[in-house]
Structure formats: C-alpha cells, structure tokens
Image 1 (cartoon, rainbow, N blue to C red):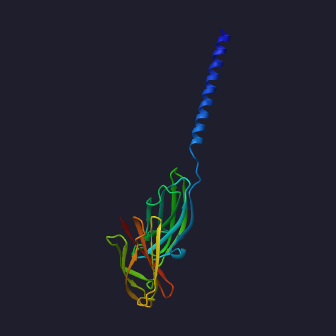
Image 2 (image 1 turned 180 degrees about the horizontal axis):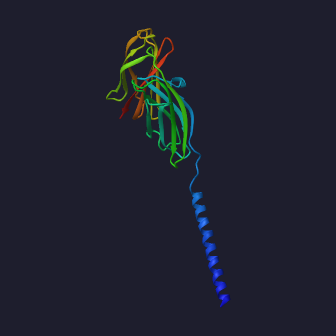
Image 3 (image 1 turned 60 degrees about the vertical axis):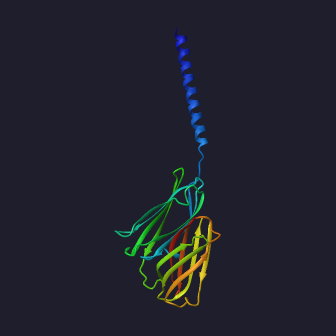
Length: 246
C-alpha cells in the first residue's frame, strides 16, 4: 500500500514537472516569435530657421528632424509650453506621411499666434513605434519680437485644372528691403526649389509677389509650399501653405 502511494506521488510529480517544462518552452517560443526592435531614434533636430531656437509671434516656427524606427512609426507628438507661468502652448500629434514608415523626415511649420507672450519656452518631440517604444528629445525656444522682420500677407497658392501650373501670390513687406525670395514645394517624395531675385523686387520694402511654377512632374498627393523671404540685412522669415494634386 505504501509503495503504491509513493509510485502515485512520483507519477504526479513527473506530470507536474512535464507541465512546467512544456509551459516554459511554450512561453519561450512565443517570446522568440515576437521580434524585438531597437527604440526609435531622432537625429538632427532643428528648431527655428538655421536652428536658431528663436521664433516670432505671428510667424511660422520651423521644426525638422530625421526619424528612424525599426519597429515602424506609430505617431510623432510635438509639444511646446512656457518655461514658467502661463503662455502659448502647443500639443499636436502627427501620423500623416509618418505612420508605418521606418525612416522619415519630420518637417513642419507651426503657426505661432500673433498674441503669444514673449519669453522662454520648452519643447518636446516624442516618437512612438508600433510596439509602444518611445523616444523623446527636448529643446529650448525663445519667443522674441522683431518689427523689422520680413512678413507677408495674403499668401495663397492654387493649382490649375490641368494640374501642371501652381499659382503663388503674396504681399511682401521687408523694412530692411528684399534681397531674395525662395519657394520650396515638397510632398510624396517629390521636391522643387526656386529662387527669385527679380530686378523689380530686389531692394524694395514692399512687393506684390506673383509667380507660376511648373509642377507637371509632381505625382498626385498633398504638398507643402514654403515661401522664405530674406532681407538685405540677412534676416529671414518663412511662411507655409498647402495644396492637393488630384
């Protein structure tokens, strides 16, 4: 009788050990089946024109960075808040032209409200991949007023019915007089840059900028148009519009 009980206990113990081994093997196999990726990487962050870390109320703030995510990008979040006290705040999530990619250029122009309080600000650029891994970089930003900075009003772009001619128009104001104007169009892996130094424009403090750019080679999709005005003292200001090509 005692021997029978011992044999039964040994059999139960063997079954329990087998179950543990099977369970451990199963979970190990599952873990091996789930690929492990390196976290996202953010390189070459630029804040402001020429990475100046300066922005001006009523103007665009240039933000650019190179993103790599072996686990593919899920979202990118840009947030800005005052260093102390109250002021302008921004919190925007971007997925368009980013989600699902392993490598991407993050290039945005953020509108800084004309009434945004001047002073020191703190920013965060956060990338999350499809597995939930997060990489975040921080930056400093200063909002300053400069009434002599070039500005534009009534900036508009429009594509003709044939989809090959882009119309641009804006009233340019440059207290230090215009040196040149550059237009950059990009989207869907296509890019075009044009620089203008028309005799009628250079040296003027106000100018009605009106141009047509051939975009016949651009594939269908959504496009960003950047208008950068440089004055004769070297100051720059950049503005952005968008258009869709069917």
